[in-house]
Length: 99
Image (tube, rainbow, N blue to C red; front, top):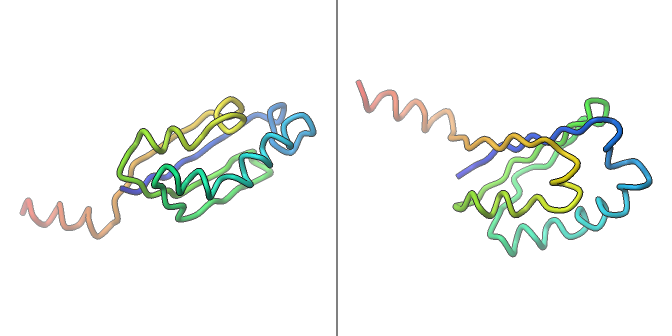
């Protein structure tokens, strides 16, 4: 299953601030190893710094792993929206099967 994850934070909790940057860099540098450990495939990771928003597209069979992926400063400094999604083709297939 694919998940679109949107993390937002206020400027006061920005990961670029000196008090948060070291912890964020530890998380970021270990992100790929953590994803592998949790059986998560990172399809994409993006940010819009001016909006203080981070986006991930993650693939996993286990929602619990997705929530476990976000720890430390990624969890405490953000409001998260974790949305399971399917492809547009999968949606069309569902629609046409019902016809």
